[in-house]
Length: 214
Length: 51
Image 1 (cartoon, rainbow over the protein chains, first blue to last red):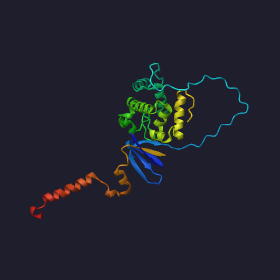
Image 2 (cartoon, chains in turn green, purple; image 1 turned 90 degrees about the vertical axis):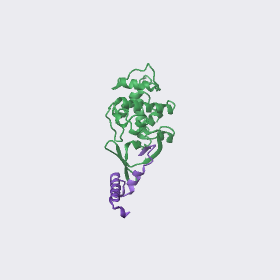
Image 3 (cartoon, one colour; image 1 turned 90 degrees about the horizontal axis):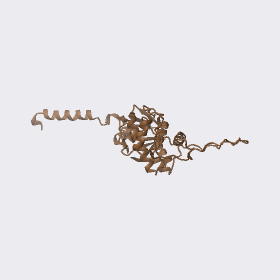
Image 4 (spheres, each protein chain N blue to C red; image 1 turned 30 degrees about the horizontal axis):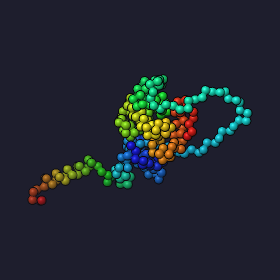
């Protein structure tokens, strides 16, 4: 559980696997154990994108099959086992936490590209790129995050918790997974962070959903 | 960018102290234990009429 305390930093650097060196905007710094850090947020707000120029004589586009407008976020026995690495494990874990395995697989693709040893420069670990502090909230130790079963367990529990919290709204749950519940609450929706918006678009694209309005 | 802190991390005193205290004043369990042990052994070894 976070307490909503945010610390503005200029730079961060992972020291070993368990500590994070933070440089404050004033120039001072400190080193904290990684389990004191819920997440690091690239809260860069992008400039509005320019409208793409409209070609004068645009050819008539071929009618394409309309993409699915939405995706079921909850588990349904008809949902197939994902044809991705760890597909069977993803399906089992998703079923246990009442999640659509395709959503979990798409999230893993965006987070780690199915690399169980993925370690981000922010200290997030494993398949679902969890911070040690977040894993601890969901009953998984930091050292267990390299194990696909335990990583999926904590990540799926977290995603379920977020979906329940946001009444099944996938966009808000994904925004929280990436930027934290605090940011979503603060902005009353998807926060205007470049990284978070790109992250949601990437997952929607993997799921074959239309580009979300974020 | 921002760092979101966990619930228990309203910066523990030790970290704040490290930012302002010179290193020789920082708490060192081993050093302090040795100092206490030395004082205690000196007290016990002292002749009884000193006290």
